[in-house]
Amino acid sequence: MADIALEMIELGAVFFGMGLLGRLAGRIGLSPIPLYLIGGLFFGHGGLVPLTGIEDFTHLAGEVGVVLLLLLLGLEYSAAELMTGLKRSWTAGLLDIVLNAAPGAAVALLLGWGPIGAVVMAGVTYISSSGIIAKVLGDLGRLGNRETPVVLSILVFEDLVMALYLPILTALLIGVTLLGGLSAVGISVGVLVVVLVVALRYGRYVSAVVDSPDREVFLLKVLGAALLVAGFASAMQVSAAVGAFLLGIAISGSTAVNATKMLEPLRDLFAAVFFVVFGLNTDPASIPPVLGWAVLLAVVTTLTKIATGWWAARRQGIGKLGRARAGAALVARGEFSIVIAGLAVGYAAVPDELAALATTYVLLMAVMGPVAARVVEPIARRFAARRTAATPLPSAGS
Amino acid sequence: MNVEVTPLPGIGIRKDFAIRSGRRLGVVTHRDGQIELIISKPDDPDACMAELPLTPEEAAALANLLGAPQLVAQLREEHKNLPGVHTRQIPVVPDSPFDGRTLGDTALRSRTGVSVVAVMRAGHVHPSPTPDFTLTGGDLMVTVGTSEGLDDAVKILKLG
Image (cartoon, rainbow over the protein chains, first blue to last red):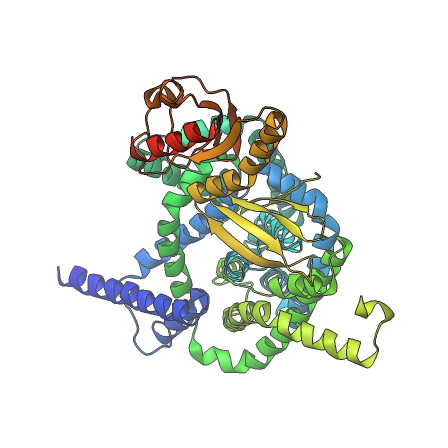
């Protein structure tokens, strides 16, 4: 009995502490993700107070958090939106991969983490945080801006890339042969195509299976379906998160909107646990040695994301200010970088420092992203004003 | 009018068009049905000066304000050779005694001689409403009649 009491107190303290951190984040206009990570670093492995007895629960809860993060990401998009996003932004999407995966891979190779470490870090620096970015765009009143669809379609492309990347990474981590890796990729590409076709043609039947007018029944059915799909995907070594993402895409229309509303608080709870657990398992003492590399990566990948957004917006005929806004909006990294790093830590093929580097990097980028999106406009305006003052254009007076 | 429809994946749909001064005007409809009115900045056509969140009632009221005067002006033009015939828009205020009741209940025609030629609701025109048409607060009735008859009709709709 005493064990249960202690575990409840620990769990209660963790949740309450996360609540306070979330409130603090809201006050200063930050994403709560970096604060959850810092909270996790303070406690647990190598931290001030090691938490004992609740690891089993928090570990499973964190995994459920990843499933819910990806399920809700899938629910946000309809299959039709994904297809148009893919068609419109694939060139920008490819540039995005080249520019933003390369720095992470290069640093991993320089640190001698081998090809698998490079693949993991490439994913960590590549993927923008659609959660942070969507929130920032809404907060800054930029949803009606002309560059916003450009930003959103790049995010759509990244999320689709992740659906291919995660199964490949899973296959690499468990050390399959080349043939096994190829079959994992083949399976995931096949499944992705089948799900998109099913969602486009028969999405309402998938929705009808989970839909119910009763809130409680609906909640249990959606959550149950997500965990079932994630579990079977995991058993087929296609990555649980991708299974949940694909289920999210297949559910559409009003069912998707209702499911999003109902699952949001659950996702916030379990995803917060996931970030805290990731922080808990990272030894704060391992951060100082990789701090320099994290700062370097942060600076380089801020510039490469801005370049990506700038180029993509220019292709759509957006003006210079809009291009700068599109670039800066894309800078934030967050939940998915941690999902990728979280998938990798614990495997022998990946060194422990990787978790420290990923944590530090995401701490920097989750703070820097919203700040960059906010300050880009005044800076760009001042820059433009100085340029016009120096070389007055003949048409400037009209 | 060339309305541009742009999907915003994960958020909703943007519908906008360029007005004569070159600025963009439109709405962002969120997936959950929330509506925002957007107006572009004068110096940067890519950015928005304002994004005003509107409730469905507010959006409907704005649509009526924009749509009704055109209809009334058109009817006035048609009646201008008939002296003594006037066109006026009469609102059904939300606390009107006829909020939720039918047009027939107002008995406007028999009491004032006024005809209701159309009801504007949420920017849509419902032409020639029948006596069983149910009125709701926020509707705008487009009416034709004599000037005294119209004055009486305004009073009836407000007071019953």
